[in-house]
Image (cartoon, rainbow, N blue to C red; front, side, top):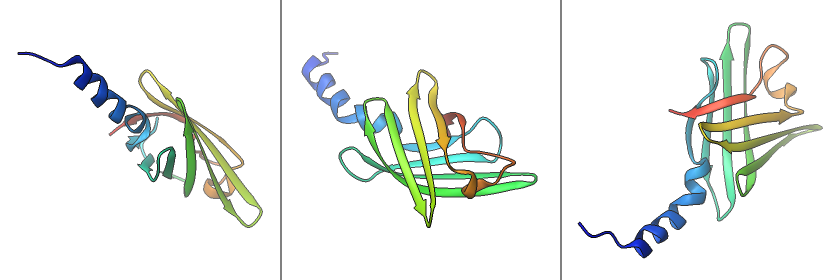
Length: 116
């Protein structure tokens, strides 16, 4: 079987950036999910949900990727939620800032996420 190296490189170049973020993910505990969809060359739509006993929430954000990092923001009135997603060797790592309004004090969107 003959494999063309230029064809493989071209295929990886096309799939590379999108493959880094797009997909459905499960967080570190049951009820913590994230969905990422590509909306432009470097832009993405993110949707987070968390549902635990005594806590539930969710937020939809729009963000931009730069390398292995995706930063997304949601704004509602004076509430600004910023989520930073970083590609890791085993999935994605999520950190949040100012998102309490979207999930309450008993839970969060942070943690390690793996593809479903």
